[in-house]
Amino acid sequence: SALLKKTLLSEGKSSFAAFLKHIQEKENKEKESREDVITSQADDLIHFRQLRSLTAQGGDLDLDDGSDLARATGYADGGSLLSNELSHVYQLSGFADPVYAEAFVTVHDYDILLEILIINRTPNTLANLTVELSTMGDMKIVERPQSHTIGPLDQMTIRASIKVSSTETGHIFGTIVYEDASTHEKGYINLNDIHMDIMDYIRPATCTDEVFRSMWAEFEWENKVAISTSIGDLVEFLDHIVTSTNMSCLTPHDRNEKGSFLAANLYAKSVFGEDALVNVSVEKKEDNDGKLAGYIRIRSKTQGIALSLGDRITSVQRGTQPNKKQ
Image (cartoon, rainbow, N blue to C red; front, side, top):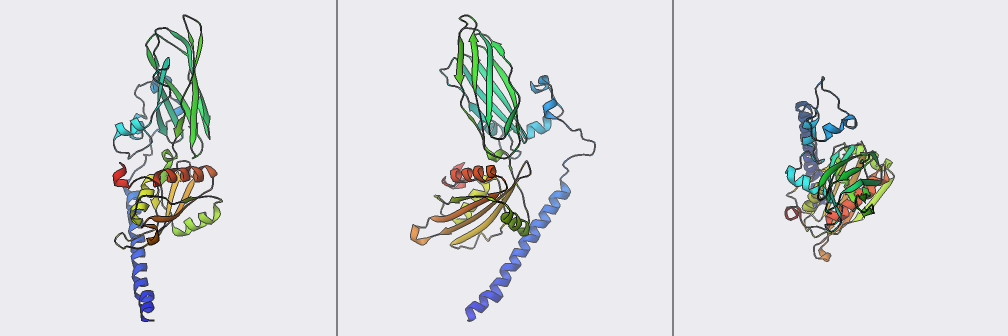
């Protein structure tokens, strides 16, 4: 028919031309960014963080302090430095416990540095105070905290270093063991868990559609999440998922065009070089009070990314819209 002829010949041609224009603009931007940004100089020193002395970790000026401040909490472009620091502070014990403890977690890609503040809330000296830590997941404690003696109502900072080997949700838990110097009684305090977020290791990345389809067919681990959200607009929901998962959208779409269905591919890389693929298929159903329905499918080479990213999407998609979520 004439209507179908117009759709196939004219509108299809214009849509494909707009798609090619979008791809060309994206390639030009990537080429300019690669040419302008200098990541390192030829004579730059290589710093091994695990070989730093304890005095340097305690606050002395170090050659790597500039990059440490830029990535203080694992987010190079995270906005306010203070707000990011506060979001990485975890209360480990209660206010009524004899020893109060809280931890400040600093994520440096492969390394996690714990700075644990210990406050003695008793009028007695506590001897042989040790923070015994354990991990669950692909994390290994490299530097365990040493035993200390802390005076009455005194405080100190204890540091521990943890090595991360893969991108998945991990947990750090432990116990404080101490001995009262006056009564020689031993005390134990179980600490709250520290939940390591997968978003600390995910970075946005781009790839071609052919590479995406090839990895999609190759990767064996898949996690399927049903869409359940209060957001009513298709593009707003996609933007919310992209922002919340720290991924990049590979599928160009017209923001001005109103439709009832949207499909998009998202892609990201971890700091360990692992690929994360996400396909969003969402539909606005008129018979469901205008609510969005559909599925988000996640594929990766390892099970940890697929499960952790699925848990992240499940927790953030039910929230409000991005501009109200801040």
